[in-house]
Amino acid sequence: MRKFYTLFSREVRGYFHSPIAYIVLIFFLIVSGIDFYFQVSFMNQRQVQYTVQEAFFNSIFFWFAFVLIFPLITMRLFAEEFKLGTIEPLTTVPVRDWQVVLAKFFGALVFYVILWIPTLLYFAIFLKVTNEPAAHSAGAYAGSYLMLLLLGMFYLSIGCLTSVLTRNQIIAAIISFCAITLLFFLGLVQFILLDVSSETRDLLGYFSAIEHMGTFSRGVIDTRPIVLYVSMTIVMLTLTHQAFQSRKWRL
Amino acid sequence: MIKVENLTKRYAGQPAIRDLNFEVGRGEIMGFLGPNGAGKTTTMRILASFMPPTSGRATIAGFDVFEQSLQARAHLGYMPENVPLYSDMRVTEYLRYRAALKGVQHRRVTERVGDVKELCGLKSVENKLIGALSKGYRQRVGLADALLAEPDLLILDEPTIGLDPNQIRQVRELIKNLGEQHTILLSTHILPEVEMTCSRVIIIHRGRIEACDTPENLLGKIRQAGGVVLEAKVGKDNGADELKKISGVREVITDGQDDWKRFSLRVESGVDVREEVFRLATERHWSLRELSQRRATLEDVFVEITHSDAV
Image (cartoon, rainbow over all chains, first blue to last red; front, side, top):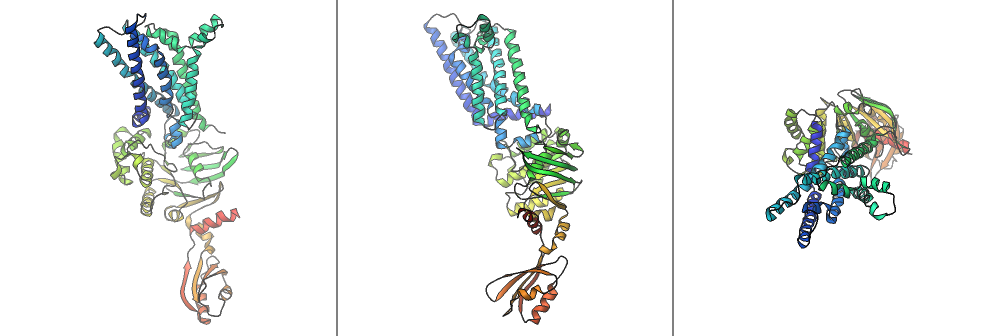
């Protein structure tokens, strides 16, 4: 446990030692800030059926920034170590491979969570300025942030896997970006292919991040997406572990 | 401490090392010598459980480096080639991090980190970013890291590469002192270093062990590579012809264009021909300004072993 904690805190600190972390933070704050501003001003102009908080988590801006941050967060995890050769001192001390994999994953997750903390401020400011809550209930906040965490875990684990497969950070970023975007668009297929059967549509809907976010941001906590994302994260991390160990296969 | 049996490693079918067999006993300083690409780093990486061998086995303190890699690694301090380090960390921070990873007890971390910094002369740079350090200091951080957990065995891949002569001397002293408590396997291509520090030497060439012995024995085997150097004014004589007649002399190489000629004599092992040479010189009325015996060095051994194979 101590070794895991040592590796984990090194990962978290590693983010803040590199300029990438600050660039991602700033980029993300700008985009989410603009998103929030647009949603509010849009609602000022006409009558709508949804709340500010729902609008914020379901806009195009949000999804655009969302799929982009994962490759940026995860590309360096393993690829950088392979490139710099620091993987050699790391794997020749008595630590287990799964400790390394989990430390990197949770390190990335902590950074991801930190990324979202400022957005809580938006809602606080909104409440202070307008004297009206941005959402119908506390559950709506909880639901949206829970979905953010679940989606984050899954997409970060994909990023881990692509980073362990190559020593080139750019390649890792491109592959994970493609994989995440494809998964994301899987949920949109039902709007594009109109002649598919309703079963297929339901099946695709089960994978749709947009739909899940829609449900959760209304405050409806459905267990199916929770099971899906947690289990997929475990699968991805298992694959990452296997790929990381593959250097030890006798070939 | 180290036991290696029939160790073979192939990269994409190309053998990097072939059927290595050797043992390193407790308290020995073993030098690993070979030209570039001979398989030194490959062997050390296998011993450090960084990569598996294709076939054969290796054990460290009785633990198989592949099957019981975690226990084997716990006995080992490894300094990889070129010392890869996290350039965004500070020296003390890095050493504390490494100490925790190596399972140094929490209350002893500060003490151990202080000790290795002292030992490796890192006090003056302890708060610097590793990325800002010179090659020599990075090398020392790597060495300090290897020593952190007081391992039984140190594996050092090219510990003095990139250091200036003073630093080399310091590191050599350090290794010698460490040898009193640790078993050390070090690779290098600096030959005097091996002669001065190592109790035994393995010469590896093209993935095979060509020789494994103490430096003295290796020199003994090849004493003829040493010989006698003579600088003389031989007048009308040819010089070389006369010298060749002395029994024990195998070969004479003549240098020098002017009156003073320089003769290098290769002699049979264990024969001292200097007295004979002097007698010849007085007989033929040569003027002599140098007559000395050249000791064979490991360099001769190395060249003979690695060269004869190449030709």
